[in-house]
Length: 194
Image (tube, rainbow, N blue to C red; front, side, top):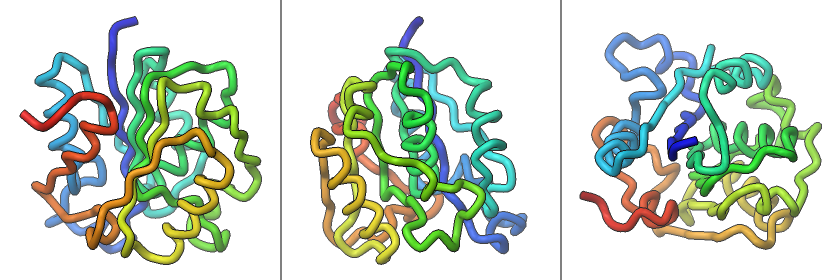
């Protein structure tokens, strides 16, 4: 299978999801920029539109994700709840091997109150999860919200072999339409932006 990439967006608020002036979740923040950076490197990049992103449900997101080929050369990138989804999906598919994985501002719903349909608390993180990948990196900002900080701490404790990149003062790494995330390319082993 040729290299490809799947980039999974996060969980927008209900009012943003239904606001016609806002981009769809898969076309928001730095996701289109990253997809373009991958495409110009001859890596087909897919940014699925996850169903009812404001109210994520693991089964529905899994069915959408299953539409894409995922194999040993597939790069996986998730932002926020999308990163949490990838962690859960990989945990539930231990035989699957993938390329590099990047978890950007990962959200595992540590309080169990915001993304109840993902049922993150039902999943036991395995340290061997990193071994399913060609390398897993956690990227987050030092001033992100407490739920993200707790999720990052949980992932770092459970996945000691994961790479870790902390940036300063960038919040939830969700800077709106047209933003970039050069650190993602470096974490994926692709060098600087073009």
